[in-house]
Length: 241
Image 1 (cartoon, rainbow, N blue to C red):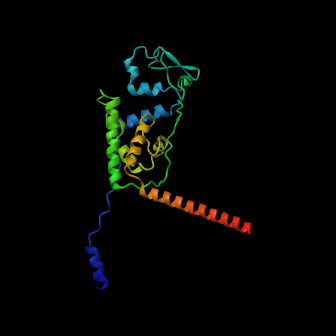
Image 2 (image 1 turned 120 degrees about the vertical axis):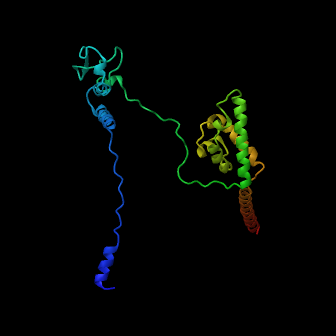
Image 3 (image 1 turned 90 degrees about the vertical axis):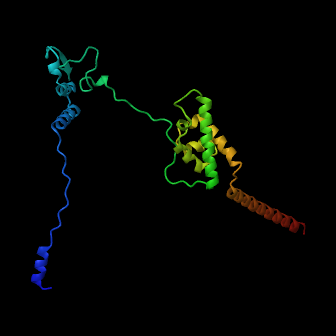
């Protein structure tokens, strides 16, 4: 293809339309007004009742518009809508009447961040643990809330909590380890029953890998002790000669 033909071919090609940009939706007059008064209410260093009253049009709802005064920074000014008797004005006019609340968190969660290795559980044990936990939660609900229609087993221990505990049954040996592994509101009250149920369950599902490791440790300790005894015997035998 020569140059002229290439140019003609390029001219015949339809231009690719530019992607449409989403235009920002314009604010309505009401939205703009709301935003303006909200901003004024937030940033003002004067009385917050002034933008408040303007926004709600309180001046037209009261008689004797300037018949009352309020104190702002020790200077009296007139407000269209005075502070009701016995009521607080705002944090700018009377900051001592609006103390900043302090929130103290105690007894924080002891859950540790990051990945944690958990003892393996078989599918059979996982299924059995799930059923045991569901049965336990229903038993607790019937026992402690016999006439309750709101507090049910699922309220006491949700399915999410059950699904979190079941794979970790080999790691949960006490209330403390339960609290370390699971964030559950009822741990202080019912954690002991959960631990007991898990302990009884594991009697039927011994950890064979753990038992094998413990047996290996005992065997190595016995061999080491036997070697020491033989060495001591040889030492005493040579001493006799």
